Image (cartoon, rainbow, N blue to C red; front, side, top):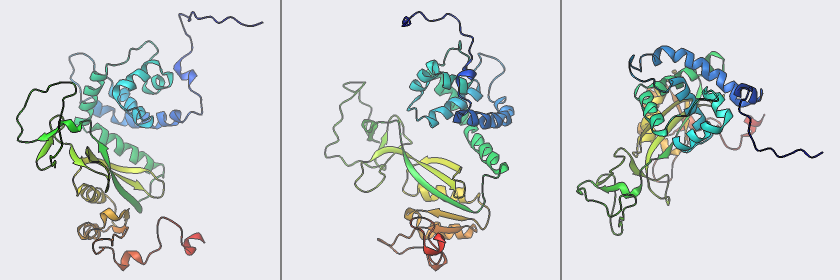
Length: 310
């Protein structure tokens, strides 16, 4: 007999979000590792909040929600809060009960900024790296550094001449701006909504956008990120961040990088730190800083040589 399509939902549920998550779901293993790190950071969390006033968003739940935003590529806090409202998997991972309300996106953003100001995100990454080291999932020999552009949350219409006075826009929500015949650069222009964002492009022929520079260092053996940093998108940002991260490597390590890092200053600075540069040669427009000390070794990427294949 065909069952009826009942639309009336039940008033009470006796099944917890924990029971809804499959035992082999990848977030279960991630949640266990994350909780270990958060337990180590608990004394630091206690120093961030005042002892009086309204309770803030628990830092543990805030960090778990931020991790979900990264893992599932949620574009902003507003859709993240929407997911957290009806997604049982997200509620379970963050630690919210079924009857708990979600946070206002603005409140979530302000609480997140407090964690960034307290350098909690940096401490979280350091604990994760140390956790991998204790489990033998981190080497101390071969690393690779690279950078990318992070598009800023500022539109090109906000990129105005620094000497230009404030004029009331014709449309506050979407003002009309005429860029024709105007040469814009970071020396003469700046964003009115995000002054630290700089105009940058990823490569030749690509459009320029207001951006920041993101940098990451990866352990070649296990593919784990061991260091990360965000800076202004200057022309030397990748090499400056690479040297800063290389200063924390043990002497005798090697660092791989693309040809954008092939400059005499960067290569010589690595050797002074006791780090061997495995940088791709850039011989297109200038002489390469990479000599026989590096080129005599087999390639570390691309098609393997005959010796590597054996």
